[in-house]
Structures are given as structure tokens and as C-alpha cells.
Image (cartoon, rainbow, N blue to C red; front, side):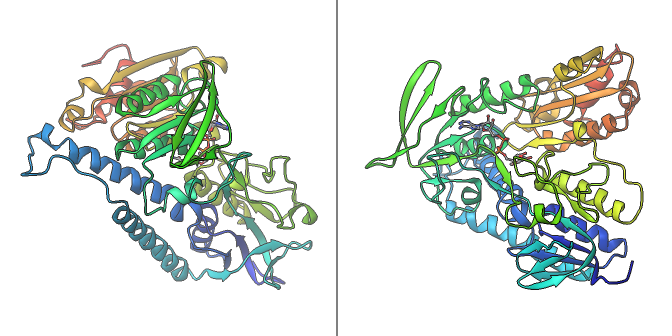
Length: 467
Ligand code: NAD
């Protein structure tokens, strides 16, 4: 590409969508500028996925250490382990710094120009950064999203916080209320409960945790596991703005059973995120933005309504997942290269919630498959009978696979140990439109957690070993 442009592609935003576009584009030989006004890596590396999962791992170690006796490990003079949150924060920061540093090195080695500042689209389709204009043959917008607050719960970073604060905090509240039982609310409820914080979770919808997304049976298993460990979960709960008290904050809420008041030290609001698309010159430049602030795109190419301008990641109304942003970045770069990208199949992306137990799924739930008109068969296999699950002392959960009768796999739903890793095989098989007997014929190592997936696939053929 050449002529009248400084770069082949100018990318605004250095989170997963933006940096993936930069790395993939550079590996295809494109000249690239990446505009970022904060730390490279965006929310995911700095305030989201990575630090949150580091905290969940700390919670896992806390659980294991305090149940070491179950494995015959005894310590002289120590009966309980507790979390030193400033040390936990230091460890988390170390992981974040290593990843951000590694990413900066990779960006440099690929000869991507990192431009520091706030990028804005100009009406002529260029990108202005602090008064300087960068011209690209194509522009990709990947400015991500930020936590959405609710009226009366404005973030102050101490008493009323978002995941931005909680992922990087060096202190732990003693009593916390989590508003919203979605992905973020569930993961934090899991961390806090495990490290001994009195945790109350308030979800507006019926059910409990994860009311939208996974198979309700999986969400139910997670809800029960959290309640058993001490999380107080209130469904159909609407909280009123908290009031300061001598001891912290008083939070009133209504459920169908009546009203209640609790005192907490902190309120974590996890009621969703909103795209960052304001004050970027989008509408003026001809990029259409929806009422909810999402950039409208043709998902076969990620092209916006302005020719030459593309958008990927959380600014687009698709699943707000880093790995979806990566995939969209590849689609956009391929489209810019004039190749025919394979669009993301949004109904079949892998979802993972890193709670304890972990919840992961890809493809249709049983109900969604039926609603889409499929004649379905479903099989389940519990981890309770799996040798490896017993060995690691983690038997809560199951694998549930949905297939079309006499047809391909439609969905996989796993709750239990290492569901986050186990989902990959089923994700691949579903997207490959494999038949259960094809997958069931493959061997799974014994003993392994993955046998639970293999057994479920085999059972769908009408015969089984332990299923
Ligand atoms: P979410 O949309 O997943 O969940 C928000 C929840 O809050 C919903 O269940 C909703 O019913 C509830 N809610 C809304 N208003 C409420 C109110 N006033 N009172 C009580 N409940 C209320 O949003 P999130 O958990 O904030 O996550 C935001 C984004 O981050 C999502 O796109 C998610 O995919 C992404 N994320 C993903 C992961 C992961 O993949 N493991 C982890 C963290 C975040």
C-alpha cells in the first residue's frame, strides 16, 4: 500500500483489539501506528482479565492451603492461612508489568509506531493526536469500554468502586456488597468469599449469579457452591443508593421477600460496561454510532459506515471478551488486505467465568437450540465420578453437551475444575461442526478431567463406558 498516507493502518486504542490488529497487521507486512493515551494492554492487561484472574488464583491458593489437611499435609503451629492483600497486589502488579513490558517489546520488534496521546477521527478520515494528524489508508477504532455506574452509586474509588479499582487495590474490605451477578460480580464474589470477606451479592434478575448467558443448570451449580462457601446471594434485588454510617456504608435493598438493610465497608458496582466512543469525532466523520454508544459495523469485515474506517472490540456490540476482540482484529486486518476474512461466529465463541467452580460454554444451550428449531439430544457427565477430579479434590460440577439428533454438536457447557481449559476441545469441535461420534472416537488421557468431555461425547452415540 502507498500514496498520500503515513501508514497503511492507524489504530486508536492499545487494548486487546488494538494491539492484536497492530501485531497481526505488522506480521502481514503492513506499516502501522498505534495510538494509546494510557498503558499498553488496555483494560484486559491492566485492570481486567489479567489482574482479576491473578486474584482468583490467590483465592485458589488460599482454599488449597486451608484444606491442605485433606491431602495429609499438616503444618506445625499453623492452622489457618490468611491473605496479605498488599503482597497479593504486589504479585498482581508484577504479572501485569511483565505482560505490558512484553507487549511493548513485541510492538517495537514488529516496528509498529507507538504514538502516545488521545486519538480523534478527523472529518477527512485521518487521526489527530494532540494537534498532529496521522494519515492511514485505513483506520481501526479499538477504544474499548469502561465500567458503567448506576445513579446514586457514583464511583469514588474507595467506598463505591468498580472492577478498575478492585483488581488493583492493595487492601481488602471486611464486608462488601457486590451489585450485579454477571461475569465480573460472580468472579469478585468468588475471590472475596474465598479469602474471608463477608460478601453479599445483589442481582436484579431472577435466578442468582450469571442470569444471562450460560445454561441455567450451570449457573445454579455456581450459585449453590458460592452460597455453601458463605456468599449471600439475593436475586431480584434492587439496591438504593448507600448512605454513610459510622461503621461504613448502609445499603438498603428490596427483594420479593421484602426490604433489608446491610452495613458494608465497600460497594462494588458490576452492572456492565459502556463503550468509549464519545468525543472522538465519529459522527462528524460519518461513522454511525448506536443509541447505546456502540459503533455500527458490518461484522463480515468490521467496517464502519465510513469507508476505510473499521472498529473492533468493546466499542462494537458483540460479546465483550478480549479473545473476541483478537478475532475481530484479524477479520479487520484481513479485510484491509483485501482478503476474504472468515467472520466471527458470535453464537459459538468460548465464554469462561473463572469463579470457583469455573463455568465455561460455547454454542447453544439446550433451550436456545430448541428455540432455534433443532431436534436436540443432550448428555451430561458429572465430575463426581472422574478419577482426576477426586485426586485434585474438586468434584463439584458437570459437562453437558447438546447435539442435533443424528447431527453435529451444537453446544458445550462445563462447570467444574479447569472448565476454562476443558472448553477448548468442545469449542473446536462445535465450530468444526463435528459429529459426537467423531469426537467420541478420539482418546482422552486417563486419568484426566478431559475424560468427562470424552465420556459425554461417547454417551451421545448411544453407547458409553462410565457415562
Ligand atoms: P454483565 O452484563 O455480565 O453483568 C451485569 C449484571 O448486573 C447482569 O446480571 C445484570 O442483570 C445486573 N444488573 C444490572 N443492573 C443492576 C442493578 N441496578 N442491580 C443489580 N443488578 C444489576 O456485566 P459485567 O459483569 O459488569 O461485565 C462487563 C463486561 O466485561 C462483559 O461484557 C463481560 O463479558 C466482560 N468480562 C468478561 C470476563 C470473562 O470473560 N471472564 C470477566 C470480566 C468481564
